[in-house]
Amino acid sequence: MSPTKADFQIILGQARELVHDQLDLTDKVIMQVAAAAPAGISERLVSLFGRKGKRIRSTLLCLIANCGTKPPEKDRLAHACASVELLHLASLVHDDIIDGTELRRGQITAHKEWGTQVAVLVGDYVLSQSMRCVINEDNRDVPVIISDAADKLIVGEIMELDHCGETTLSRAMYNEIIDGKTAALIEAATRIGGIIAGFDKPLVDECAKMGAHFGIAFQIIDDLLDYGYGSKNLDKAKFTDLSNGLITLPLLYYFEDCNATERTEMEALIKKASEEGVAEKIIARLNEKKCFDKAKAEAQEHLEKALEIADKFPKNTFTEEIVAMFSSMSDRGN
Image 1 (tube, rainbow, N blue to C red):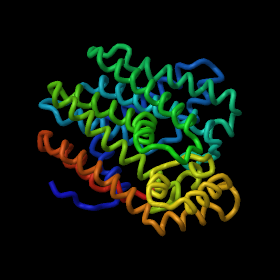
Image 2: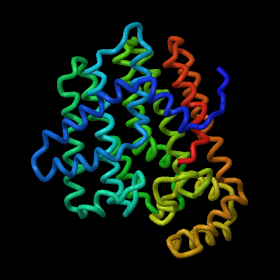
Image 3: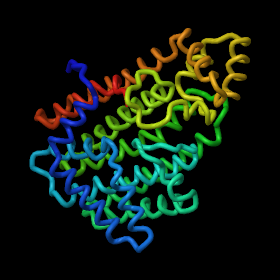
Image 4: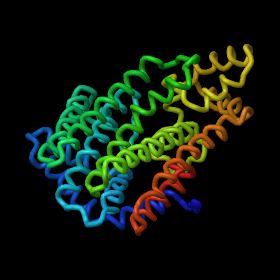
């Protein structure tokens, strides 16, 4: 299967259009959650849910679910997608508090708008509702998959905080962190998509592996975008990871290829990364050792593995869109 490069946002838009009826029904399920919430929470949820993201996870779930021998049951699929999107949104609300982020999806973040205490509790409520969306799912594996993904998200975030500023962070630990904080939910979405498609267990497991590879690549590209590498129309502030002392893949590559003096100097720069002009100095050093290029190549390797698995799916329009998403993702600019 030979990938054809194209703009990721255009491809994602085409994919969403292909399953727009199912995504529209997902939006209705999500807004029903807001409508059913108690006063004081409902209004905030309406505002929060109105800030639509890229819906990558639910789009991918829908595409896979439509690759089976018969069309998926609409309400079942919508509730599964709503569960995944709500879990993702809850994690973003909490992440923004932890990171001190002021902008998300081009708008002020929940904790800046409502205060930290309310935002934490709103995030908790959304997390609870994500579980409720699949409470009546016939396949009892699905609620467990969502619950497991929530566990991994939380553990991944805690591990990231535990290792914040750790310039001796191992590659294995970095992989474990991004597997939890990003890949786990995409893996869950693709596994659920395979279940709803009616795939046998071996192919469902392959769906999950495909999602994990895509998720890892997605996070690596996010790491690069935080430095401004390849970014365009970014809907969140640059250098957030750097200012928070997070050691991501470009820095891991740097520390693998530097001498003692360079390490000491870089560690000093990281400690004052939030000061004016320091981030640019760090970027210059990373460019010198081609750390960004190496990280992007690693993301591409994961995408190639995801494409190999997608090649095992039944051949149809939905599979073609999955392939197009994977083929274009390494060049996304936001």
